[in-house]
Structure formats: C-alpha cells, structure tokens
Length: 227
Image 1 (cartoon, one colour):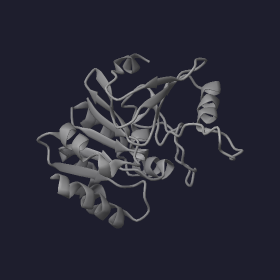
Image 2 (image 1 turned 45 degrees about the vertical axis):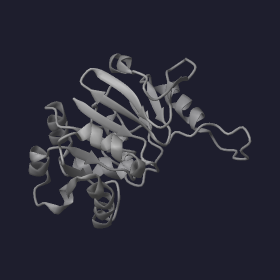
Image 3 (image 1 turned 120 degrees about the vertical axis):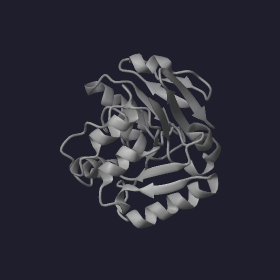
Image 4 (image 1 turned 45 degrees about the horizontal axis):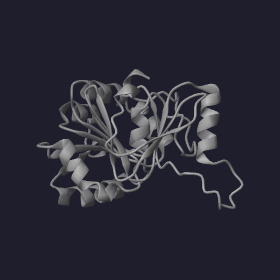
C-alpha cells in the first residue's frame, strides 16, 4: 500500500514531494467531490499539477467513475468539506473501488479532506457537517486518525473558544484511536509497512490519556500501523 497524506494548505509547494512519490506515474485520477464547483476545482488542480509533469483526469468527467477508478494509475482525493466528500463517495459507490485499487498497490494521494478519508473515520475533521453522510466510517487505509491543518495553541490569542488540542482531547474522551495532527506543510508517506513524516514542518501525535508528542520531518512512524 502506497499513501501520501498531506495537510492540504501548502499543496502548491509540494511539487517535489509529489513527483518523488509518484515516480514514473504521470497520469492521475482526481476525486473532486469535497468541493461544490467540480469543474473549477479540476482546473485549479490541473493548473498546479500539469507544470509538475502530470496529466489529471477526474471522476466527474466520466460516465463511469467506478471504471475510471479501476483503470487509475494513481488516485488523488482533494480537499474541501469532508462530510460532503464522504457523502458523495458513498452515494456513488466509490468507497470499495478506491479501497480495492489502493490495496492492489495503486498510489493514493490525499490532501486535507482526502487525508481524512484515508483514516478509519472522519471524526477528526475540522469541517462543518453541511451534509449528513450515512456513516462516519471512511476508507480505513491507515489504523489511525489524521487531523489536517493542525494549529498550535497561541498563548497570546484572545480567542475564547476551544483550541485544537482541546478538541482532540475531547475526541479521546470517547475514542481510542491515535490522532496525528498535521501542521500546514507536513505530510505522511506510507510505503508498505514503512511510514515516514515528511514535508517542511513537524506534526503532533495525540494518544488517549497521554501527553501529545512532537515529531519532525524524517521521523519514522512505522509504529502507527500497529496502533
């Protein structure tokens, strides 16, 4: 299994990482359903990835998205609203086809909501539930949760609401899965049984009943596959 799970916000600076991950694969199938305007979203992604040397197709441009997934050389699930993304993928019966292709070794790239989708559930997304999917269960390509766009607590902030750390601690009041908070510019790369933190900034790992731990790019996170 080959996964590339990005925080999302700094994707346009991740060209070298994308090229390194995809290697000789130059055709990517885009899954755009986290955003309302699919055509506009596709053009933006093409505008980013074509200069990097990739041809980008989209599931929404074909009459048979399942067949497109079955033929995909690489799959890229983009960011936006995670609830909408999951809801539409379930409604279109795309979940199992994606799982099967990724299990067969087809590279999976996720950005923001697409990284949430690789987790067991979408319960650690930051998004508003603008739609109500029939389940929160996601693709389950990794045995731990991702929290994209992780923001550290600012002691000087006048914001009176919950910090991201408090919200993730609330998750652990009711759930046990590890949560990896990806700051903007951080990403997780999985190659089989090997997991590495990459990108330009570190990430924070939350475990139930324990203090959060810091990891920096280059750190191996293989142990998360046994979490």
